[in-house]
Length: 307
Image 1: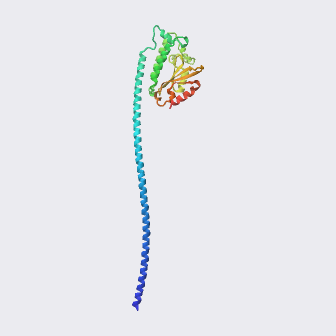
Image 2: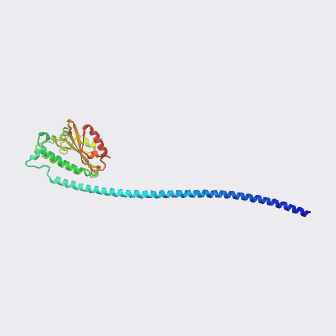
Image 3: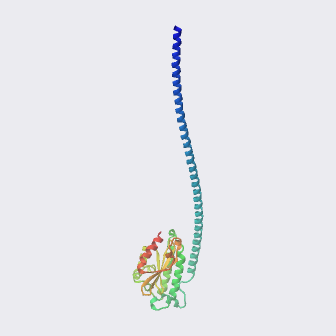
């Protein structure tokens, strides 16, 4: 009897154990399936991320190659420009050297040639005669042509500011002294060649009359305002030569009359100097304009010269 009860108990325990084991196996299997699904999703997402990063990497490599090619092209262009600028610099240096040699040659030639020449003082008297006295103006034209030629050669070479203007001033003073001596020997006064505003300056300087001969109050004022050197050429038509020493730019302004008798200015360039590459077309041509346009002309010209 007891043995039968034990078998029934064992059978019940085995059934309960089998049921619990089956439930546990089912739960583990379900958990494994869930983990497998999650793993597959993670694997799929990882594959997509890998493909995306590969595409980004390829695009970055292409951009790097493009940038390298662009840098190589820019470097090549810079090298070509450097060689071109170096060539231009060498050409300008050779031009400046030739101009310096030409200036030295002209200075030596000027020192060798006498300032006045002629027989029995006839040429001197003709030169020192004022234009209003009815004398033949050929010697005035020769002197004006000589001054213009010298100015054209000098202003084409920019002056070094560190070198100063002492040699040029010394040469001008020597020329002024020689001219004053010749005039005094022939009985002429420096005031006969000066406008009214400058005669007072010459007459008022007792010790330095020769030095003040070539100076004019209004001329100095205009040169300070515009920043250029001006000189007057004695011709049938009143002509002014202007030069900018730092750039070598020079031009002439001539007073003329139009068909109606009104005064006009004729602009003619002598040398562009270092402004040849940046100067506009109107600065390279001969133009005529009225006196009312003179202010605009100098404003535009100074804007380009000071650029």
